[in-house]
Amino acid sequence: MVFADDGCEIWTAEAGSGTPVILCHGGPGLWDYFDDVVRLLGDGVRAVRWDQRGCGRSAGDGPYTIARFIADLDAVRVSCGVERVHLLGHSWGATLALRYALVHPERVASLSYVSGTGVDPDSTWKPTYAREVLRRIGADAPRWQELESRDRTPGEEREHAVLQWTTDFVDPATARERAEEFATPWWGINYVCSAAINGEAKRFLVDNDVPALCRSLAVPTLIVDGDRDLRPRWAVDSLERSLPDVRRVTLAGAGHIPWAEDPAGFRAAVLGFLASRDGGAS
Image 1 (spheres, rainbow, N blue to C red):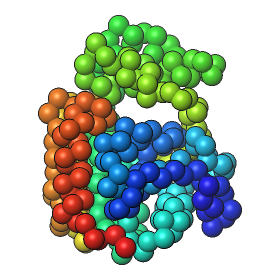
Image 2 (image 1 turned 30 degrees about the vertical axis):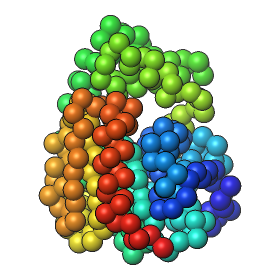
Image 3 (image 1 turned 135 degrees about the horizontal axis):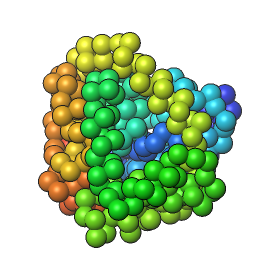
Image 4 (image 1 turned 90 degrees about the horizontal axis):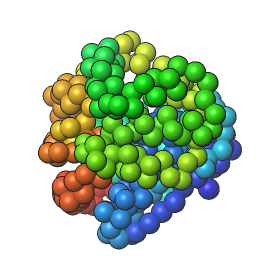
């Protein structure tokens, strides 16, 4: 465990050696799911994983604020014994890693922004995403909508999540199996955390000129997309245009979990980027 500055116990795990990379999982309200990413990156990367406050194996019942999560991430960095670290964030974790870099650019050697949703207000892309979720769920849509509309038992919570997570994978023949694997082990979704963080993140995008903030961010950034992600990739275009030091890799035929559907392409993109920045962490 790593202890945050308020004493909260944050679950962490490490694998490999060499370049230190902190992995930030998505959600919010979920837990670390980067087993396959750690295997792909290999022993040459010191992969540091953590469960965000109140989620998975980490303690805490709040406060669920982005500032608090940034401070928790900094506690994980300190535990690594380095002044500057590489960050890899996926989905909401990409947003968290970006927000950390905006607050502490001097502590970030590089940022890998995987399957994020950009820096434009949610209203620009969320309606498209919602329509696509129902389309890709297909015949299971009535069951998902019924579960969505009411309180659920713990078993139904997992079923609801699995049905939605099938949409994150492209091939319908294997999507349910992949979603089941993604939900195993099942730690339970922290919906209080999810609502609080999502609400704050949404307000931040409306109340601030985030592209302008990004224009001053001198942190090397890799954007990794799957071109079949239901979250429209054009939502990330303004982020790409705003960052002064950025490269973007779009993986053909991959969805929201790109390392699951193009592991070789994902590995090559991330390791190639880290190699180009090797020595930046210290």
